[in-house]
Image 1 (cartoon, rainbow, N blue to C red):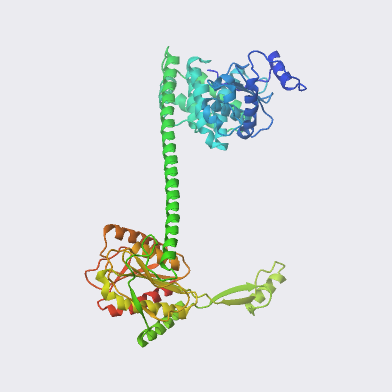
Image 2 (cartoon, one colour):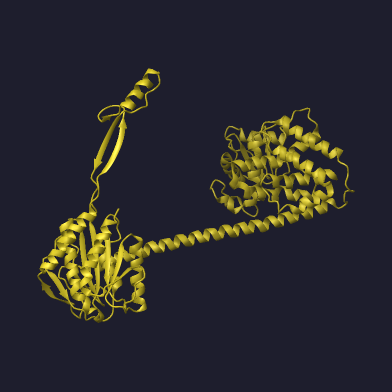
Length: 599
């Protein structure tokens, strides 16, 4: 088995000299023999460009033509710094279809690229040279061990080339099993070195090579196979320039074969048996590679599906934001009209019945809530202490003496005796409160207390912080703004009644979310929903989707109900009020808690 033919000696033939002359000429058009079409010269030049990354060397030349001087599919000439490559490896591709300069083009010819990576491994790591007086058999064994050693060394530099090194084993090694250079026990040993050596170098898997391992153990015996395994494993650790150690391992190899007692007579059909075992290895490799490819494709498809889903989700969220902005713009219009879900004026009129002056109790409640909000929003000043070797700051005598001692000892002073305390005021968070009140026919009892609560909260927020804003939206099928998200305190209480039919809480939440920035951190945020939640399935689903989005963003969501028959909207904090008149106090407490919890 020709294990050594990939590394050629430095002896040149007249044909070699002619090839060198063609590359060393003065630029004139070289004569092209019929067996080396000029069309493959470009491919060789581009392979040479890629060889720099594969081997880490910039002094190498690649010639590509039909057939090679060595007779091997490819060969590396150390003294010529040349790799010759058989163009037939690219079959059935034609020269114009092969573009190695383009990274990724090798996917079109993995077998040829695998051979090229193998030769690049030799160019990078097979730099030791046998002495001229070395025994030929020992040198041949050293080259046999070098096959897996060079590939293993290459794998440590470029682990992603493993798939191509596996391909090269199919293209370079396995076909030679049927045409051995060795006979008898040496044939089985060389097969073990080429196949099992690549297993131990990490190129082939143990389960793939079991057929060869079992056959070689039967033919060679377990003891001899273990000895040979130890030799090629030790050779894998040899340095690239260490010819002495490589030849010592090769000598051990020859000695082990010479002294081995035959376990049983060599089978007459040993070549056929080894070829069959290697065929099993190739089949196992194909199965594993197909499984790995399927897994990689599945992972790629899953990643693509996730990316597509994320893109669709982002597009959906952007669409929802645009829709919410349009809804808020239509609801909080300057004329105060009731609008339909599509943003047009509603044909059925408004639930607003008028306005009135706030009562003394409402004014007192607004003042109390304003004081409570200011107290809840207050943040203590933060203190930051830093030390310094120089003033200003409070002097710490212990550190000052330590600094003097360090200086007296001749060391660099590290003690910092001055302490500076900086106090900073923490900004008080503003408040954002949105109230969505159901004005369907079953909610008539909530009209007066919610109207009062909306004014109280809006008034208190305006008196507390100029950046605080509140808004109230009445909803059935249509939407009506009872208070708007402005910085001015309302002068009058807006009254309304509840005579609606269906519900549209989803759009009401969108209007309040966009109008008050309920999804944006940095403020005390509260959404209050006053409803009995007797909705259809579609109405409930739309509302719950928006509620979950707000709670995920850190906005508190409170549902106020007035009767025991009320349903609970998932995601909200349910608060049942037996007396409707307690709604203002409940909303005020929830607003105070929201701003207190803001960080």
